Length: 222
Image 1 (cartoon, one colour):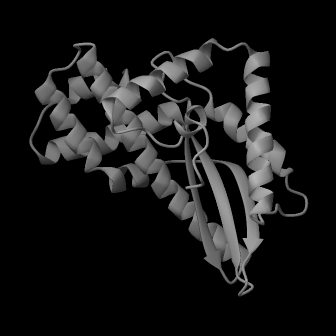
Image 2: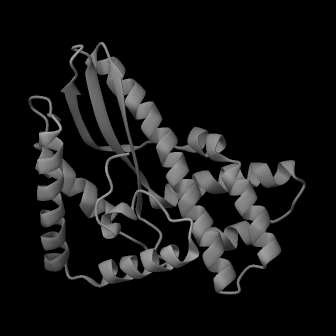
C-alpha cells in the first residue's frame, strides 16, 4: 500500500481494528455523504494535487496515451468517497505494485496482487458490518463471533469469487536495474463484493456445520 494520507482518505483502503477508530471512520463517512458535490470536488482536488506531486517525486509515470496521473487519481478518490445508506463503500479499492523485466509481466503480477488486496478489503468491511449489527442489536455476540471467524477464514474463497474489476489507475517507474515496477489500483462494485463475501462465508459456515444463513443475509443487507 502507498503511504497513508489523511484519515478521511485512508479509511477507504483499510479498516481499523480498534472499535473507537471504527466509530470515527463511520463518522467521517457520514460527513462525506453530507457534502455537496462542489465541496466534495474541492476536497478531492486538494488530495489529488498532493498525491500526484508525491508520486511524481517518487518517479512514477503514466504510459503514452493513458489518462494523466491527476485524472486517474481524481477517478480513484471520487469513487472511493461513495457510500451506501449503511456506509458500506459503493466501490472497494485494491492496490498493489510488482517489479518485472517487462511491463506486461509486472502489470499482470500487480493486478493479481491487487485482487488479493481487494479480498482483504472486503474482509475488513464485512467484519465492520458484523460489528455494526451487534451494536444495533440485530445479531447476538455469539452469532457475530461465528460469522466474523468465517469471514476472516475466507480470504482465498473471496478472492476466487471476485468477478470483473474496474482498473482505475496504472503507472510505472524504472529502477536502477532497468526493471519496471507497475502500480495498479482496482475498484470493485460494493454489491458484488457483498455477493462474493456471502458465497465464501456461507461455504465456511457450512464447513463448521453452522446454519447462520439468515443472519449472514441480515449482515449483508439481503
